[in-house]
Image (tube, rainbow, N blue to C red):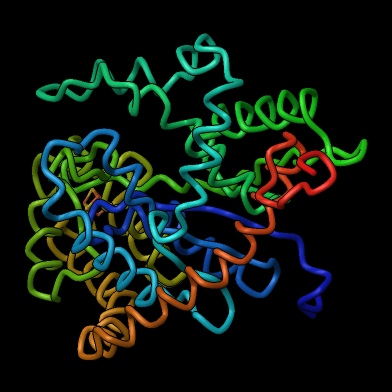
Length: 346
Ligand code: SF4
């Protein structure tokens, strides 16, 4: 039985406003979030300010991209009755907390976050030697600590961000406190399973590799993408046996197909009893079954864009209440509350 609402631990997570989501986003995050809705008190946000840390030069699509992410949140099964969803910039307290954290965070802490150097090397064609890019893990710390979350669901590569958040909380609590009590709890990383989901070229599924299967891809597009998907290179001819464990299509089967189909794939691939075209057809069948209900839900919301905006506004109001309470405590702990202090000024 799920815990009662008031006993639930709080979870906070976000996704960058990069537009429509792909299957990798679904199995790596969204699917887990959907399962968490009844177990935890969940805040899920669309990180539009985070998108600016790399795409600051052209902001013309940021709002539209945020809405596309929201439509996929709803399509994937996030339910506004069971979780709070909002756009990061609609709760401007995140920026205030980020600013205050930037005052106390040593530069070295940010420079040693592994994704900082990695992304600077990998993302070419953009000048990422900006203050905002260096500070984005700190903005993430503000996002998390604002809600005093107990858990942050993350994959292995995001653990350093949660570690940084814990260090920032500790440092803040060392400098400032509320009548002897710490302001911020230290959140725990909730390691979520990261199933292997290759893109159509066999590399990790990513928009930057143009190898994605989108949650919105219609059936013919899914089938066409599957047809061109790479397979076990050992199967040069139809009569060559293969191994689904080294084939990206095999990985799709393991995630989305029934036990029966998976058994047929292993048997048929290893004995060369089936051809890759047939096997890819089965994988496409499984994917279409997963995607169809999501696409139906999405359509319902696409037809009522005002409803989607209303959900986001309600989410921002709920999140904003928590954020306001946190910021009051933060200001008070720093001796900078907004209250008129009559005794000192009289
Ligand atoms: S039969 Fe299926 S699992 Fe085997 S190599 Fe071909 S596509 Fe991959």
